Amino acid sequence: MRVASVERNTKETRIAGRVDLDGTGAAEIATGIGFLDHMLEQLAKHGLIDITLHAKGDLHIDFHHTTEDTGYVVGEAVSKALGDRAGIQRYGHAVIPMDETLTRVTLDASNRPYLVWKVAFSRPKLGEMDTELFKEWFQAFAQSAGVTLHVENLYGENNHHIVESCFKGLARALRQAIEIDPRRAGAVPSTKGTLGGSLG
Image 1 (tube, rainbow, N blue to C red):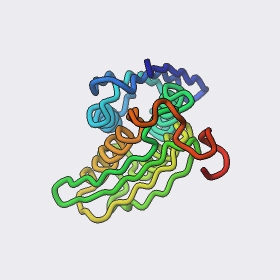
Image 2: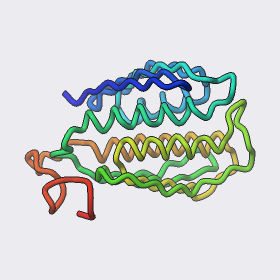
Image 3: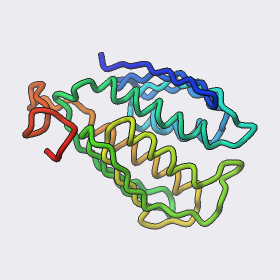
């Protein structure tokens, strides 16, 4: 079973997370940040990943630490659940429309973390959440999940739609990349025989 749990306890946050990569999209999310909860529910639902995440953070200061650290926890849980990544498709790609918005997300579950973020917002906040924090979440996720992740908003006007299309795009691309490829017969999808390190 591709299931993993992760805990992260610092002076700023206390977070417990669990993922099941072969789930049904069930989510039990409580970060104290309503909009972030909604986005992580989208990640679960459209990625068919069961996610349980409970976070207590220093929200009286701002949302930065909680947002970033939930990205680390979800990403680390995904990486642990993947193990040596044998038999996976490895690559995933999604182009997500949401009304006037179109976003492209491309992912390589290569165990080489990298983020390209080409997303701009016309407002500094969505509700109480700083829009700049979404990049921080994706950066933390890419780093701890060990994925090369390219997120590009091709066009759009509504900031809510832009963010949501990024999370849905990640969900669909991740779903493709972590699927077991029956033709690989459990082999690691790399000419090196292992994922991570130098290019391969």
